[in-house]
Length: 324
Image (cartoon, rainbow, N blue to C red; front, side, top):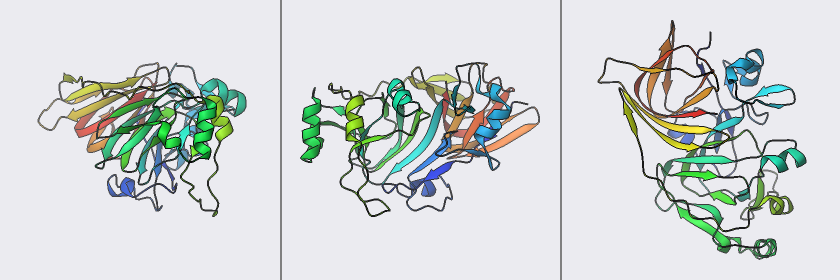
């Protein structure tokens, strides 16, 4: 029976992380710092679990749960084409770029990485880097990196709660200190660093840069500072939703669930084309149907197979609904 699965995340202790994923989302993960949780993932660098079993193993028994969209297979095993994360940036992340699919498949044997950020919280003055503020050349960028002046070529964007940023492969970018985000991306872990503030890793050495590879994939043209679109909510009985982004890799909707004052439950069912990942970013609730019920809380992620049973949602919560 195609019922929802509560996922257990993989966790990362990158040096720029903080404690908010434990403090605000109750993760209970014994890592300091706790930088990222990979909430819905079959990537070998960090797999989600279902009752202690890797999600990829579950999907190998039920590949039809992914849906009829083209499947990405790495190493002969079923793969989710997307990866859903929570990220807590206590410090600035490195200035970086990701390759597109063509380059990544040719040179790394992997998917590329286009990604989307939804800002869950941001402290006063928080910023991020999004593209170059002018058209530049490879020579200019290399010289700026060498002289420690790359910052002068970049767009710095102020950030606040509920902002959204679509970051196409090839776009130079960096998440700034004080940002707490949900990230939806292609299932890839390829990052080419251009600058990392001369930080030292656990091995006592400066973290590796990937300048030559970055130069092969960078978009050197200026990037317009993203304007935040007008909020367009669709209201229905017990819930409202808005489309946050849609591209060839994924679609993300924000769902505001509130059935506390209504007897009617919100009905939900996935189609044949795609699974859905429901990430609860605030509040709590339940999902039920045909003798099945699952409670969810802030920070939980639920995998709903394609062509699921008819489900009913109840509670007061904010969810990100991710599909392909």
